[in-house]
Amino acid sequence: MTFDFLIIGSGAAGLLTALRLADHGQVGIVNKGDFNMSNTYQAQGGIAGVMDGEDSYDAHIQDTLKAGVGLCHEDVVREIVAQGGAFIQELKNLGTPFDTLVDTDTLHLTREGGHSARRIAHAKDATGRAIGETLLNHVLAHPNIHCLNKHMAIDVITSRRLGRHGGSNQCLGVYLLTPDNHIITVAATHTILATGGAGKVYHYTSNPHAATGDGIAMAWRAGCPVMNLEFIQFHPTCLFHPGGSTMLLSEALRGEGAILVDAQQRRFAFDYHESGELAPRDIVARAIDHEMKKQGKDCMFLDARPIGKATIQAHFPNIMQRLLDVGIDMINEPVPIVPASHYLCGGVKTDVAGRTTIDALYVIGESAATGLHGANRLASNSLLECLVMADYCAKAILASSHDCTRMALPEWDDSGLSPETERIQIKQNWDEIRLTMSNYVGIVRSDEWLRRARRRLRVIHDEIASYYWHYPISRDLIELRNLSIVADLIVRSAQQRQESRGLHYSKDHPKTLKHAGDTVLWPEQL
Ligand SMILES: Cc1cc2nc3c(=O)[nH]c(=O)nc-3n(C[C@H](O)[C@H](O)[C@H](O)COP(=O)(O)OP(=O)(O)OC[C@H]3O[C@@H](n4cnc5c(N)ncnc54)[C@H](O)[C@@H]3O)c2cc1C
Image (cartoon, rainbow, N blue to C red):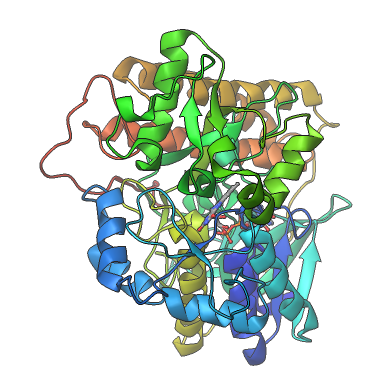
């Protein structure tokens, strides 16, 4: 199988890239589940962009820089923020059903934590799904785009890996696991990894099952550096439910007036920050974490009653219904919540076009680290980043003179494997990684906890290495291997940062240094 452009991932970043490239060649777009298994489809709040006369680019830029606590790359922030309005308009033109003011075509803009103005365009409380479905409809209608659902990328194929050491290292394609567990070789002139985040590294997460950091691990194994992986955003308000549900309660609820209370109905957010519930996410998450630990409770509560029944029904119908499905009536009672891993600010080090250190390999969307978010992401900037990166990536590819001399690529060698491993081994390692990360590398960290995490992860890593190449490959095993690599990279990044900044808080280094830079880890060169 051969494509001009091979895109791994069908979230917002992958879908828009496919559309941008489709008139210029054959596009393959791969996802390991169904179209709805992506962070994009989960996004509730909206997409940020300056659309209101009262708002300004400068205000959006300043809010982003403030949230990023000195680590944002200002040129990148300016570049991306400047595109907000245009991309929201394009999505609207493509058919995204954004909410509008009554009887007008003017967008209803909401406000989220850290934003100084109303600038979040949204489609009720299911914006990501609305954007994803709109882009998908156009993708499915294009004759040059070929969708490979339930196909999982295992690794990228590079010229270095094939032992061709002359010239630059080039990406030549990808190995894919098919739905019936065969491994196929797919050659491509350009390969784009748009595989999303890695929320599954933690026990509680708002992310869907797909978020196992595959693209980051693949790029790392191929030789790409990663940046700022210690900055994990924990969403303050995920539903706490015995069924282990990972449903998120959108920030927009607090924007519209919901408050945080403990079991005694005591409002506590103002004890931690003058903006109360509208403080930046890391501060709200740490406040909840601190109250839970101080009071020895499993959860705190989000009380949406101040918003009022009419607004809840009009703006949050999906959240309301999903809560009713698990027996919680948010109009009349507080909702139990916990902070959960939500967004990965770091990723593969790239520019805004997703260029990596390997020719013809691009990484875009949540898997990439461009410098937009710095030490903390401003709410609703990530969908915007996905779209801008997709656009720039496609332009960079079309402008590039990369000429991939199509060479025969070797098939995956699975000869001499033992019969399948017992799955309990995979489950055990998977659970151990997530608990280790939650307990030692969560919202609050310490030198000793990071050392312990590193030691445990090394043991798990060695175990996985001992059976990865000896048993038939499976989806769980691929994800487990990727998860263990990304977890280790997060810990190593956290160990390098000898201060507290944004989303990285260390008990041993509580101060924010005057000067600090990005954390960049380089793999051993192949
Ligand atoms: C609950 C929730 C709410 C959010 N709310 C907002 C919001 O309101 N505003 C905002 O801006 N951002 C929000 N975010 C963040 C935002 O949704 C994501 O950052 C963004 O959608 C990421 O898009 P993406 O295209 O990079 O990746 P994703 O949308 O996650 O897509 C990744 C794709 O890669 C595929 N994939 C992964 N690994 C493989 C593999 N090995 N082989 C094949 N396919 C693979 C997956 O199947 C999926 O199709 C939210 C995130 C969550 C989880």
